[in-house]
Length: 213
View: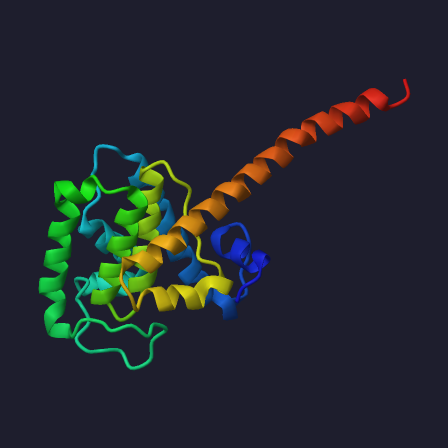
């Protein structure tokens, strides 16, 4: 777990970094780059979301794999954070093709964005195409779709992480509930920050008015 100052040091090129933390900083920078790419894609109405968009996000998160052509995993990872069943390596390619077709279907595009995001997330994680960064790539892609649909991003906080892992073991309904709560929490936080910011100038004006002349 990194502190705010360490995260700031990772994304601010003007700050001289501790050499021992450079590997962690590089990971944070790649994550930041991937999030910025997703935000740009969400704002680009001329470029529709495709399953390849997740692949592009993965390429930013894993530049070493990009050099190799972004191959799918060849075996089942022994040590991983997730407990749900995943596709065996030989079934990854057909499963990804089927998921890409689902993404492009007109009926899919007419789903409510939160249902669409939760279903995509659930199905993608059931495939788990890459041994590393599969989860991070689809979470960033999911927030891309939420932003594209006019919703705030969804953040699964550490206290809900176990719920997230458990939701992946079932159908998309568990993730739908988690996304609804996460989006609502983000919206409430944004409103609270906005309210506090809008009150601050008024407080400063009152202090100036009350100051002795």
